[in-house]
Amino acid sequence: MLEPAYIPGLLAAIGVFFLLLCIARLRQRRLMAAARAGTGAGVTLAITAVVVALALNLYTYRRLSYERPVANISFVRVGPDDFRADLKRPGLPDRQMSLTGDEWQLDARILKWRPMANLLGFNALCRLERLTGRYRDIDAENQHPPHAYPLADGEPGISVWQAAHHAPRWLDLVDARYGSAAYLPMADGARFRISVSQSGLVARPANEAASAAIDDWWD
Image (cartoon, rainbow, N blue to C red):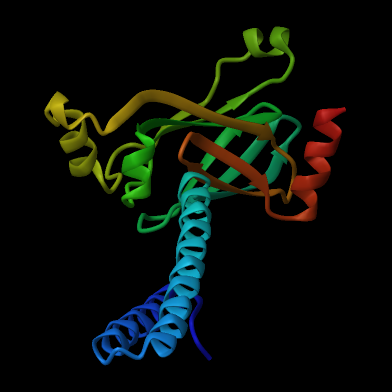
């Protein structure tokens, strides 16, 4: 089966074939045959242009909405407001941490590229900074010191981060450097997936326990 990515190239090749055939017929002074070949070349190349434009539009959308998984986190209740958090990150050792509260928060530093750099294949750089437990109720938050754990040690990609940070200004590829956070409720047995998009962290439920916790939390 023909791969979709090959279709524009195949159409362009057919269009060029008809164009060369048209030129050959003109040299032979076969005007009707040249006209037919020229029409075929024009129609085929026009279709190619439309297909390429649609493909570029789709590619642009995919690049600017691209998400990369950065962590999975699950929770086990060990007390009324105490949870054990299991954090898994690609290419790094798993970690277990004790969090107090009814919500969790993951903080990260984000380096966002300009749209043209995104289209060239540059994805937003993410460096996870810390995981913290928190309370939804402000008074409860003020009465309990938070449990926070650093995550940046050993994070891969630091060299790329530093290179982008120190890149000469004339390159003008970096759009913004900022902090991003995702927070959701903690619940016994809940699992969440965290991704980084071109604009920051995105957290989503990974099982029914997490979805139910979000439903109750959102009410």
